[in-house]
Image 1: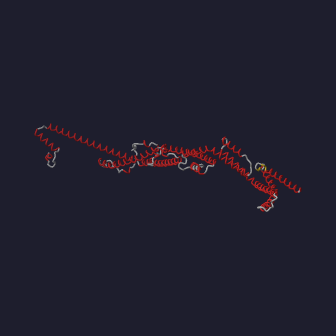
Image 2 (image 1 turned 90 degrees about the vertical axis):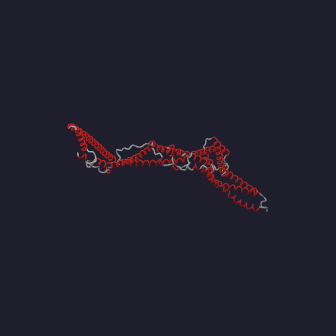
Image 3 (image 1 turned 180 degrees about the vertical axis):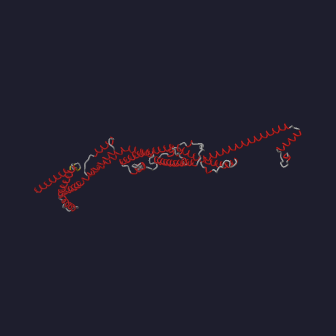
Length: 485
C-alpha cells in the first residue's frame, strides 16, 4: 500500500486505489465475502479492458500488415508495368524490421515509382497522340481524332515505348513522303494551270481546301483521298493540255496554209507567232504560261474563220496573179494561149467549190514550173530565131537600099548607109546557114518531145520552109532580071 502514498510517483496507481478501497471497506466493515466478490469483479473488468486493448492492437497490426501487403503488391505491379527492376531499392526482408519500419522503407520507392509512372504515362500518351494524329491525317479524318487516348497502364516498359516510337518514326517518314508527293502534285497542277490559263487556286482547293493554304506546309492534307484526287486532277489537266495542244496545232497548220495560200505578208503572220511557235512542239515541251489558254485558242479560231471567209475572194486574185505570170512566161517564149478561156476556167472552178484552193494553186504552180522548163528548153532555138529575124530585117533593108537609085549621092548619112549595107551583105550571106542550123535544131527538139515547135501559134519549121521558098523565088527573080538586061 506504500505505492498509494509514494510521492515519487505523483499519480494514481492501481495499488494506491486498491489500498484506498481496503481502507473504505475497513471503515464500512465490509465482509470478506463481499470484498472477494468486489475484487473478482474488478479483476474481470481489468481483464476486459486488456482484451479490448489487445484486440485493438491486433486490428491495428492487421491493418498495417494489409497496408504493407498492398504497398508491396503495388510496388511489384509498378515494377512489372515499368519493366525496370533496377530502379527500385532492395526491399527489407520480412521479420528483420518492424512493420512501420518496413512501410517507411517502401514509401520512397513507391513515390519514386509513381512519379516515374506518371512521366511514362505522359510519354506514352504523347507518342500515341502523335501516332493517332498522323493516322488520322493519312485516313483523312484528322479533325475527328479528338479527346485523350486511354493508356494501357499494365505495360509501360521502355520496350513497349520503343515499339511505339519506332511506329511513330515510320509514320513520320510516311507523312514526309506523302507531303513531298502532295507538294510535287501541287507544283505540277500550278504549272499546268499556268500553261492552260486556268485559275490555280480554285482548281487546287477543289481537291482539298488545305492545299490552297499558303500559311504552312504541314497543314496540307496528305490523305489517301487527297493523293488520289490530286493524281486524277493532274491526269485530267495533262489530257486537257494534250487536247488543247492538238487543237492549237491544227489551227496553226490551217493558219500557215491560209497564209501561204493568200500570200499573207510576214508582218501579219508575226501577230500569231504565239500560236505557230508550238505547231510541231511535243506536249512536254510546252511550258510557257498561257500558251494553251482558251482565249488564245479562240483567237486562233476566229482568225482561221476570218481568213477562210476571205479565201474565196483572195483566191481569185491570187489565181489571176498566177495566171498572169504564166501568160508572161508563154509570151516571152512566143507560145500562144487563150488567156481569156484560161481565166474563165479558173473563176468557174473557184466559184463551184469543187476544187480545193490549195490544189488549184499547186496545179498552177506546177504549170508555171513546167512553163519555165519549156521556156528554158526553147531558149537556144528562140535566140537563133531572133538572130535569123534580125538578119531578115537587114536583108529587107538591103533590098530597099539596092533599089534606091540615089544611094550613092553625097547626101547626109549616105556614108553610114553604105557601111550598114556592107555589114548587111555579110549577114545576109549567113542566112542560109542560119536557116539550116535552125531547121536542124528545131527538128531535134520536136523529135525529143514529140510535138511541133510553135512560134506565136505557127509551126517554126513551116515558117522556115516558107522563108526558104520565098528566098528561092527572089533569087530566081533576080537571075531572070539579069538575063533580061
